[in-house]
Image (tube, rainbow, N blue to C red; front, side, top):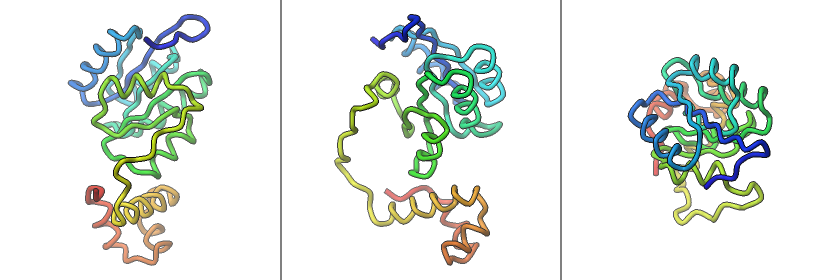
Length: 181
């Protein structure tokens, strides 16, 4: 069971545009004692976070109508003590760093189950994560570096290619592919 905040509130906002996943996660989190509200777009998430900032939030990073990090930023401004976990199907180090800088408490790559989400929301912040069983391959490290520079250049392909001393079209092909294992 999660530890209630000082006032006993266990409100949880889940923002995800994958409706079946959203419904499954909402039911699973309700069974764990959370009072769940859902949103399936950035606009809906912003509206709900503005009117009732939650104690906990689970926000998908890439939604059809924008970036879930906008919701994270608003929740953090309206309720600094909230615990926010960012979910994404496009896991990379650069976006994880951005999410944490904007106020996310943790970052999980999809598919994440309710146990992973619950643990991320309730874990002790001083607790260190275990070292990975399978560290990244050299190809993955390269891909992560490219993604980091891309994020630092505000997703500007031309500027990223210039900084990496790489042809722009080569960079576009790399960015279009999935991350190597």
